[in-house]
Image (cartoon, rainbow over all chains, first blue to last red; front, side):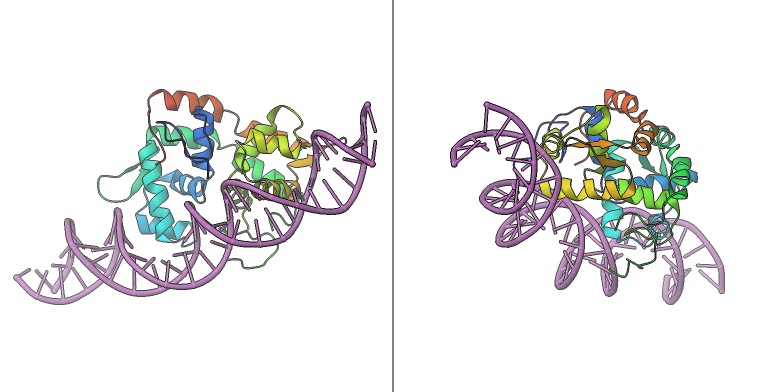
Length: 114
Length: 114
DNA sequence: CGGCGATGCTACTGTTTTTGTAGCAAGGCT
DNA sequence: AGCCTTGCTACAAAAACAGTAGCATCGCCG
């Protein structure tokens, strides 16, 4: 597989430790963006989160959550459930405009991705 | 399985056809974000693109590119190579702030993702 | 206290995606 | 003709993911 260079800030697809690459790789895993998105307005329990993601399998959701926690974007809420950290909210805001872009974009399209 | 409801605007992870979900799902596939990113300043041949992505396997790159083409974010350039469409550039701009966010974020972190 | 439900999380099996390598046909250039 | 690049595909192996089940723990109500 030639990848996985095992430095400190090296992630799967990106040998360079450039922050943007690390971030892009982290966000480019299934459900990651979606999870951040679903946490946009508050706390969700692990099961609530799964439900919000259209009943994704607990395996991935749990894995993504722990990755996001390690990255400092998500944290466990005091009385159960997960929530975005301050950084996480910042991140979400960063690609918030995606929302309206999506609407505009789909305006002129019917079928996408498969 | 159980997913793939076969409507017109339905994608893998998102049964709802909400634009944002479709977009989130599309972007949440490995290399998609990265590919858009690498195309940020000009035309890249298919091989150049692969190289830019740290020699990702041609299979995925090709697959992602065709998905992105179908979505209208990428197009073939006249004399070989791929480039972002107008919409694609718009999309890229949308999450461009990610760049500086990433820098700030990694400022206080050492190891992420894994 | 005992039972009940919810929570966070893990195990396990099977399917799908991704990877890595090789290779093709088409075109350009010399 | 040779040689190189381009876009793209084939195929086997490895990893990620999906679905289902289940566990230990905690709060709560009776």
